[in-house]
Length: 194
Image 1: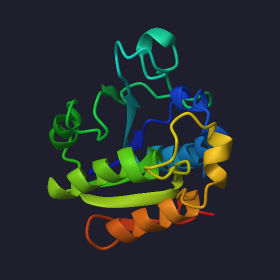
Image 2: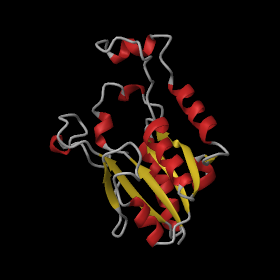
Image 3: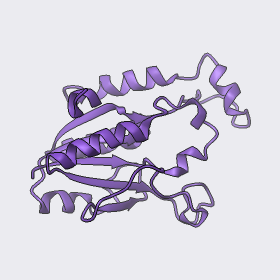
């Protein structure tokens, strides 16, 4: 085993946010499960990562009960489940140690926040010498409001602002930034079979 699938932040916290209805990949659980099944069938390691902000009072505060995998995802015995408090999955966890102690050299990334948690983890993994595959259609994100947009507007109004970056643009820009420099871009069909 020298391959691992890293599942980043596919957690109930995100379903509690007002922007979830605009998510790019509503079937993120189904897509992730396809990758998980393929990884397990090949004898690859699956690593589960949750994002947490203890004491924040937000949906990412474990005290609120949402920092758990989305329904339909279930780690098997021996599959690490780690919790991070930074955007990337390396800085505040023992992910690097888990991977290197098992001789992992190739990673497949999937999860929530295509352009944030998934992208930053991919970049760091590449910097650490891993060969990284980015499974874009097994990632999910939401529109990004313009930096000057009023903070008190409902998200449904922010989405209609022409300055808001839509999910297709977020995904395209992420792929453009990663492809060939930090990762190879692949689809779930390519990785898990049609």
